[in-house]
Image (tube, rainbow, N blue to C red; front, side):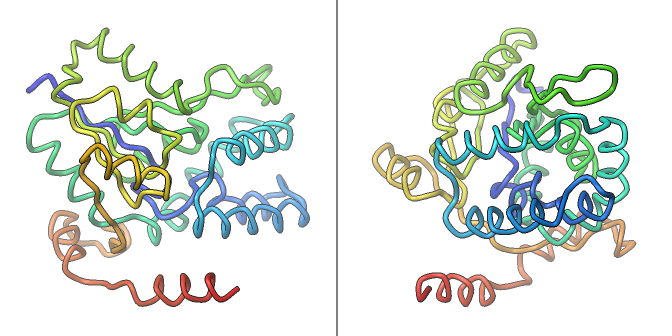
Length: 259
């Protein structure tokens, strides 16, 4: 082991959209969400996919989700996510992200996903991708149900603090470690490591990365689910880096500009 780690944001870094909002259809079908909530989630997802989210938007969504989930049964949510994770996540995963994760594993670095989404969503999703170390937002639970409060918010400075705590407890050399994210709201996370990488950066992060000469990567290729295909994941990941294209995303972006 090198004593270094690679820390990955999840949404728009490993997968193409918000992990939390990705499960809204299944939550609606299971009776957790009303039709009005489903429509609002769809609009939020579309906006997030096209423009990203700044601090105020993230805080507003966090507050709305906390209020919305009050009273939900935690075990039922976990069960729903585990049952639907392959169907939900497989079309969203970036092949480039999985290839880089595999390279860090080969180099002996620990790979840790750190996401502002709830751990009940992040943990099953990352297990599906073969990533065992996860830091996520921890909602408060009482008598097995969400209270609407949050015990730990893995966002902004909270991500950086969690990384530093893990580094101190496990002797991780942060100067030799990597961090990957798409958003300027994760600037504290990027500044904790010696190798910050901007992935599909929003406008603000792109400007910061350019001014600081940080590496910038653009992911756009989907990966075929190994479970669904029945194929060894290594060749699938390698092949996915060659296959695919950006035509659909280009058309979508052009439509967004015209609107």
